[in-house]
Amino acid sequence: MAALMEAQLPLRAVNNKIRVDGVSRHFPSGHGGQLAALENINLEVLPGEFLCIVGPSGCGKSTLLHLIAGLDRPSTGEIWIDGRKVLEPGPDRILLFQELGLFPWLTARENVEFGLRQKGVNTKERREQAGYYLDLVHLSQFEEHHPHQLSGGMKQRVALARALAMQPDVLLMDEPFAALDAQTRDLLHDELERVWRETGQTIIFVTHNVREAVRLGDRVLVLSYRPGRIKTKFSISLARPRHIEDPEVASMSKKVLGHLREEIDKSVRAEFHHEQFA
Image 1 (cartoon, rainbow, N blue to C red):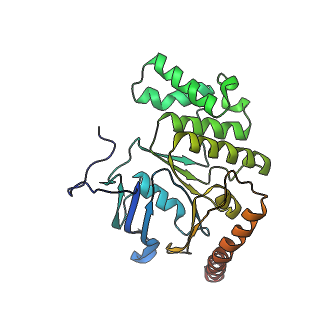
Image 2: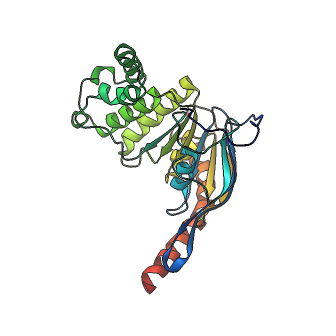
């Protein structure tokens, strides 16, 4: 089955990897109304780009990832990948959640092999690929461990290895490090950046942590409070590798946070108003 169904339009000649054209997503709300989660999103992502998205809670960050992954459909607008319209999920796009979804009864290697087994990859090749990707995330010595025997950071690396084993062109990451302690998160920033450099994949990374976004991203987008719109785009030209504690990262983060804080204040006021009149 084709990973992506072609639209009834000619294949577009494009230089971008992902194109989001005028996408809005509305959900039914009480009394027959509509809740606008996203409104008129226009976005181009280059091949191999590391794009980070920040915004207040409820601004539609996760919704946008679901739309790009093909797990949901826009109310209006279109999403294109490699010149083909996204109409369904496909193995060329993997969405990695904060909730890892590791199978507790499987070892780390077996968890990585799971998607490959579903694709019909033979046993020998599955084992070789799982070993390669576990080595890539520095977990080759733990391949026979079960999830309960691994730390939070190790589990996150197993989930990353499982996603990478599917060899997606696009890796969509929805706050994957939010539940980790600061030290583990910093180590995984280094790991993710190294893997990204080695694989050349296109990554869209959603986070609430502005410093994390600046530390990782080639660009950072700030989404407005509901409905989510692209408020500001920042190009991050700081030299790599970067670290959370770098003065340059802190300085750029302050600029991003200045734009984000206005939207956070809107979300706080909206929540307060809702509680007052609920």
